[in-house]
Length: 203
Image (tube, rainbow, N blue to C red):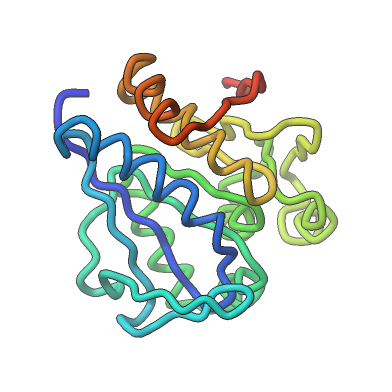
């Protein structure tokens, strides 16, 4: 990796906590234990006001849409709130702009609804939460579900993962792609995280 990358994590009402906190931890810890040289990790929301996550956790985003820096790695978590997001034209326009400007984008759980509605998964494999595949068949009927996988590379720069904890596995996979095995080993060791043997369906 030739330069420090920005990692932007989207927050919204009823976002699933581990969906955003898992990837936040992976990329933040990776940078922390390597002299803060790898990533600048930030959160953003439609408005810079406390966000009520699933089960009531209150989270303060770093930025609103207007002030959010361009994200080299854009992370879209899931949660019950994604149903409303795909009906919000302001949110969907922001997603499309940030996706286009990103180097990589990953979704966790029902975060796959956003690229699904945007047509980015048409003819592409994708993962989401086991309880969301039926709804995705309505939102993105041309997408190709991969419920047997933890995560998958859906297109050249879009990756999707299954429910909740799968976002941590995908984060480590992308960390490997960006920074290599040594950084992954150091980060997983510090986090005392045992990685799975699942691999992505690279396309």
